[in-house]
Image (cartoon, rainbow, N blue to C red; front, side, top):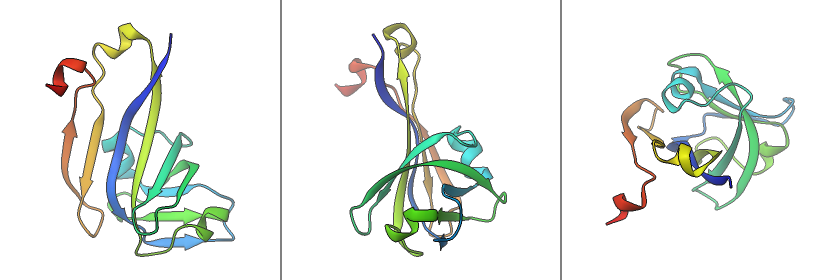
Length: 128
């Protein structure tokens, strides 16, 4: 049986741009993509902390160390520059794969620079 778990997330990033006329996706600083292990074109959920809206799209790399978090296409109706977002990537794991699974949480500052990388455990034993 496959179970869906958090694989990685970029926590409370600040949206820097929104482009309604772009062909879709979310542009993410490639330094953040690498740190979070999110691949180009991988599906992500975007949780808007500012207004409570959620959306699913795919990631595309932006310029390294630019701090860019750009919402593109129709999603620009749901997210505006200055909004705080959580970018989440999930994966499906077998029970065996879960044994070594360690989700990554990337914390950023107001300029979307990495302040910390937390590697968690999916083990039920870690909840105690």
